[in-house]
Length: 488
Image (cartoon, rainbow, N blue to C red; front, side, top):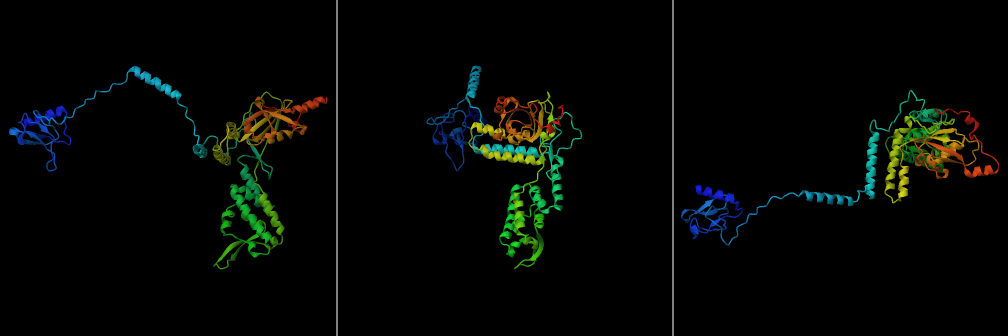
């Protein structure tokens, strides 16, 4: 036992492992040399198990379990090469000089690398814009999101230094001046009150105003027009004189719209319950009355009114004001209404941004891209503009940011004594505004406020001076000058 442990210890120190191999002595029972001189050969398998035979006393073989190599005094078969043990030296780290050289090479490589570019393919551009739209929609619908004040609270105190007290609108039906948060409710009330005087016109206004989905409104209106056309073209056929209310087309296109039932009743239809042939029970129908059948031209007139109608919208109050010459002409202190959006305005902004996705995928020149990017600047809804006249007086008005330059020119022309003479408007920096270009105010950089300079057309001035005349110092109408104020 002591000799066996000695052999195992020596095998462990030499690092030999038999692995799948087994040792077999060449001496002992097989004619090998004695205990100290016997040679070793690679083993053989016996009955499916691994053994190592070592030479024992008197040349008898002894089975040793385990994976150790034979002990001292034994050696492998000289024909077989013993595996050599390779001892790897620990790897040394780079020197300081090598590290500095590597750092310098890396820096040169980074300088040569091109800068990362944004997405260039059409799909990646669309995905990027859609992600921005989703993020913007999420932020706009979250409570307390900045810049999305949906219903501005009425201000109890108005600063006397504001350039304008707020944004106001005029109801086209009543002429009442309204705050932005009052206009929709007031218009609906005015339309409903109009039923007592003209139910046909009121129902048409309700259809086009109360329903916001313009595509759905158009589909429903076209379907109603088709019903009326059939009655007009086939006045003697009974089937065209009535409309089945539970018909699939009627339910999907007409019943879902506010004001349609009021319209049918206003033009002469009556709701009746009638039996249905080849069917048990009865159903509701709109049946054209005898008085309406006697006046088919009236149905044609109602149809044209329905097709040509537009939604009733409150008109922006220009709040036109005229100020005396002032050093504060370029100073604008605007109320919060100029920087906040209603729910409808937020939805419109999202729709306009979504439509820009397709334009981003088209091939455009740099100038075209810059122009479209400028057009996408829709941060402001309103613009407050002042026009400095030749006598130094200031003309002020409120506009939508997307209104076109011809609207601004017309606003100025309405207050001129000689409104037929051509004139020019220039923005800060000498930028000339051209009426014929019909650009939006925000595209010209005139939002949320701007000071413009008025001047007569140069050719007109030359003609007047050649005729020995000079332009009048005051260009405004007398009734406009009568309301002049002091700018503070």
